[in-house]
Amino acid sequence: MKEDDNTAEDDNDSESKYDIPLIQRISSILWPSFITAGIANSFFFTFFEPQALLYAAGYSEMSNIAVYSIGFFMFWLLTSSSCVMTSYFMKPCCDVNS
Amino acid sequence: MPKQNSPASDEAVEASLYAKHEKIYPREVHGIFATLRWLAVAVLLGGYYLAAWVNWDGRQILLFDLPERKFHILFWTFWPQDFFYLAVMLIIAALSLFFFTALAGRLWCGYACPQTVWTEVFMWFEYKIEGDRPKQMKLDKMPWNAYKIRTKALKHIIWAIFGLWTGFTFVGYFTPIRELWDSVWSFNTGPWETFWIFFYGFATWGNAGFMREQVCMYMCPYARFQSAMYDKDTMVVSYDEARGEPRGSRKRSEDPLEKGLGSCIDCNICVQVCPTGIDIRNGEQYQCIGCAACIDACDDVMDKMGYEKGLIRYTTMNILEGSESSILRPRIIIYATFLLVLTASLLVAIVNRVPLELDVIRDRNELYSETYDGMIENVYTLKLVNKDQTDHDFRITVTGIENFTMTATKDIVHVASGEVVTMAVRLKADPFSLPSRSVPIDFHMQAVDDETLSTIEDAKFLGPFRK
Ligand code: SF4
Ligand code: SF4
Picture 1 (cartoon, chains in turn cyan, red):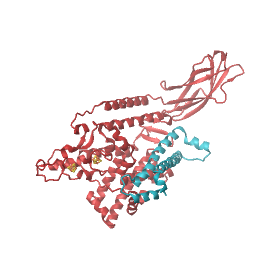
Picture 2 (cartoon, chains in turn yellow, brown):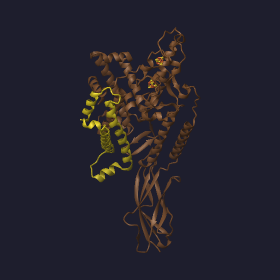
Picture 3 (cartoon, helix red, strand yellow):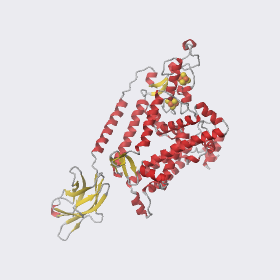
Picture 4 (cartoon, helix red, strand yellow):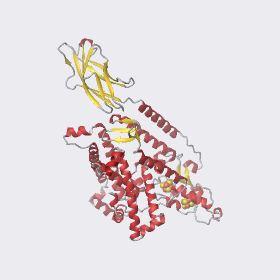
């Protein structure tokens, strides 16, 4: 629904030099969160052993690669949702009512 | 998955994603900087694709073994506990970036960034398959016919194969590549390995095939702040405005002076070769990745016109403004010193690294206990880690208190290479020989077969409070 808002805006003043291309909007959410998730993931698993975690949480057998990958996507989900919220709240307030 | 993307759906996706983006068709360039870049591409990509296959002593020289939680770099093995070294390496990498940026701008972007390097290769495939710039533009404009479908399909198949091979190599740095290779051909790679091969392959295909300069513009943090590291003595790709202007077309035989023209013949070739689609004659722009393609192109033009080369060249702002310029300035010297000192210390630290680790954990339940014969007893759990490449036997001794007895599970502990052994140790001491309530002591871990292999860990021996 957010996307719709954007396109509607684009129609109004598509020539404005302050318009941010869609690809930039998408990358600015997915990309920084990708990097921070990667960093968070490596930090996390440097200090916590995946197998010990699995055992403590009571989950069944899983390979380390699977744990790292799932961990990464959990982090990415988290970081990208915060990116989405940031960009959502960055919307100028005067646009909200119209 | 890269392969399935038919050219038709590309267009649709592109049209929606790249609404305001006009596709850039960089013209092929030849010249000294293009050659340098190809050299960099050959060394870096060659290194990337080959290094995974090089073995030393029966194992990969570069393997970030995630399943085993060990990093093999050359003949060293690093563990999660060695995180410190990684942190120092990152600092060194950042410092080098500062140093080279201050020295000559975006050298990294122009010659070494994976984005540039892979894009270069993808563009090379594009030239070979679709032809040069005018042919590519014509091909994109023509309606879909058998020829267009064939050409586009061929390009994407080659790109996809190259991307997948890249993804495969990438995963091969995290899980032994020879085993991975065998499992690929017998179709039983693990689900996550398969996923990451495709994920990385897809990212390569998308970034080097489509995103290209947009990655530099929208996704690269370095591109945004690199200009903060410039000063007026930084060598950057620049257009010599004083010499070039006023620009204008002319015949080769005409004397520009007579026509009141500068050296720029306004042929726009520098714009056509630019991978980010900018005009360097408008001055420094943050989109410029410093690839020097425009230098090669303009030098070629100058040669043909019989003018002196270097209308566009690597130079400093100070030189262009006609003032003194010095390469060796405080900023450069400071960066270089830091860089040298840090790198040297890191190397010394790694070479002298003791591949042992001893952790001493006190019994959490009670501070101390009194035995029936009036002695004070402390219990510790010891964790012995052998990070060496070979197995060793270790002896544990304690210093720091007098009149004590030590009981351990074993006198000599065998720890295999890469293993962790946990053992309990009890220390008993006479309360009257304890100087205070808490006595600092040291645990020594000494390899029986190697004098030099030892480490010390401190702990505390606790006793009763005495008045
Ligand atoms: S290539 Fe050189 S001569 Fe041609 S337009 Fe660019 S600056 Fe001018
Ligand atoms: S302006 Fe020149 S150096 Fe900068 S990106 Fe374009 S071609 Fe490369």
